[in-house]
Length: 313
Image (tube, rainbow, N blue to C red; front, top):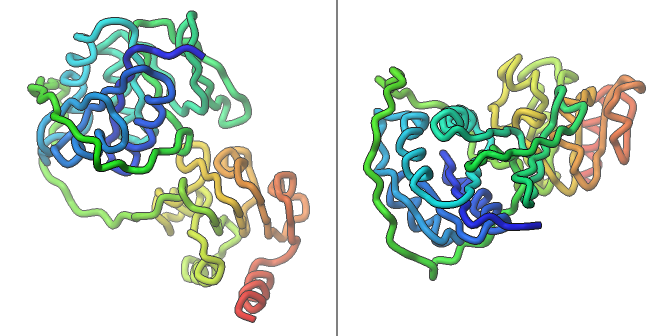
């Protein structure tokens, strides 16, 4: 596989910066990180970036999309073909669309594989709700790929690596969208992309208070708690960061314990790379059993207490 001379990386969250830099180092000869704030400057160098461009200190009056013209101006000034890598967050997906328009660049989201050859940048991504994999060839001078979580594994931080950032003047984005106020949101520090064990719950959980059963199993099993889309986006019982599926977390744990999850393709796309899948479902015909290495047909309200008691012993 060939390498591009210019790779640009950007992440709206510090947690995903190591991942996109690792991808850049694999795909390109020179990785330039675009960051907001001096703290990310040192992080970018420590994770392996060759150059760092500081877009300015954090400004609460701006949203991530506000930086589209600023980023576009920096990238447009570079010579040769370029690839821009960003994580698949909501803000970066929105930013990618704006950069595509600014730079006349091809954009592919939910990217699960990238190859570079003489024809251009080849990106594989899920299509038709996860039922198929589509391969797109980007031939534009600048290519933009928004990658799925876990596609690249960030390197260990090396604080001996450092450097000075190139300060970039902000270019006003006349989109008309302004941030006038920010309210605190109860977030989650969990990163299921890095979890070795996951217990995931689905519609089989009848009441929100019953989630404590799965939480007890997690504590005994040394696992993180995840869920299917209806629990996070339908019932809103859990944070979006814990939702596993095609438009959120793509988990790769050693053990994936699916409880009361039917196993629709949109969910299993996010769990299929687990080393071992254990499923509990009262429907013997549930699709989850087609993926499971071990399956238990039964009521989770009977099975989980039995598993918990066994672990306690």
